Figure: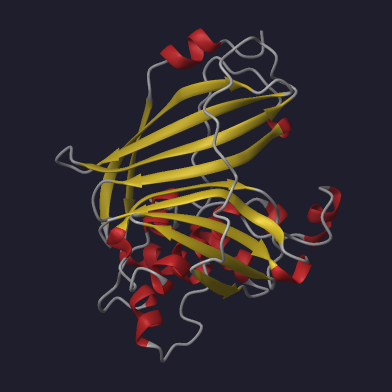
Length: 289
């Protein structure tokens, strides 16, 4: 059978070592568009080693950048999952931050399949990664939702229902994040070198007018916008950030993020104004400290 849930859920985790330096952090932030105004102190703290801060979404690429000697993302380990990898989509992402990510450091990262959900026409495989420092202290836990089209209908649990609704009132704040035409070319140096994000001809064969921005880049752009615009520039206030990827963005387009606050929970909706408000990130929640 294409998906053996017993094997998938009982498999031992795969473990890898990850290390990074302040250069990896700076390059990652540049790939999110940080530092466009190089005279703005608020922007310099993302791209200059003096008073450097680390966005929690850096966890998505930690240990995969130039200082690690790798420019491709760590391979997926999917025991019990025998499917056509061309039919999978990165459907959603979350990260829970247990402690501030240091500007340089190392971690041991364990990966395992934590859930397999049956959505009828598709299966959703949840790949969980947990990172601890050298002393065994938790740093972050992330969960990638991998949508496998045509692999549902095996009689499994459908998984939790997550509402896409936003509050029925005006947003408390709207944040505008322009992207640059070369942004994908910079972001790909932090991890994902897929030619879909650089090669115009390759992008056309995949059904796009031109190369697209990485979904995880949009994820980071929105996180930075909220940290800057709502959390006073303090990334350590982010406890959890969870989204679903709802649409593509071309480099040079804008991400507009609406924010509704209810205590320590932020509900977010990110859209592209150049394309009549087409959703980019939905089902988006940030829990803050």
